Length: 331
Image (cartoon, rainbow, N blue to C red; front, side, top):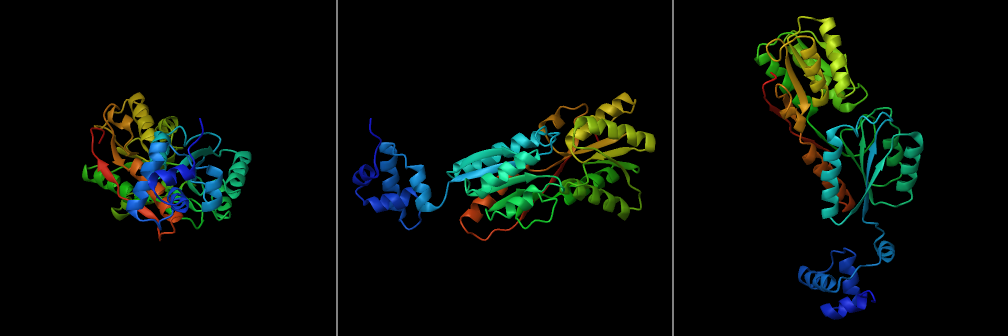
């Protein structure tokens, strides 16, 4: 069976071949009534434009790369955030008629392949998740000239727009909540200090305590459960009298809950615990975890829309989304 041709669509719609070509190539010079007529004919005939020919005409691939630059330990891809962000962004791109290429860059070789792929013009734009300050990929991709949006404020100085949640405001909400509950020796389990989210949350913790004349008590984790447990044991050794802990993400907070239970500390009677992100598991800890809700899905959608706007040459700027404190039984 022969595939429907451009001529067949034009005949069915009662318009010229050039009009059909402009519509299927996404040009905006065709009025909405004619566009609807052409698209009805396209759907009725199940016409599929030749992608190679379309790329030559439009100078676009209609493809987006979602790139996760993750260290070899795979800390990002182990986080529930990963699937939430990839799913929400991919859905937004596909709704806009874009194909999505998911690319993981955890080694020097994979980063080189990703850079070469983007530089070769295989995609129209890039949504990049790059968490660590030592990552060379953001600067390498920026040098290709392909439109890039960073999901999360970049940890390195690179001139690309980004979307993030209000890490500073969210952390401040958590600490003020603990202070309002009468907690006076508040510790923090921070994430890696080369990550912008960890830097912002730690800075807000220290500043909020400084304003009330209280000292900081900090241990460093890597956003995993096991690091949260290890950091909690360290904090208990450093200050056995602490009465609250703020963890820079929920996974570390869950690890802290386990460590406190093993140490014979009651939550929240002896030690209150607050996390960050409001992952689904926070509802099912014992006790349920107080946490800062950061809109991970909304952030991914905003990142996708920012990139789509750049591809349409619209003026776009970085975005900071609000956070909310969700109070449960752990505090």
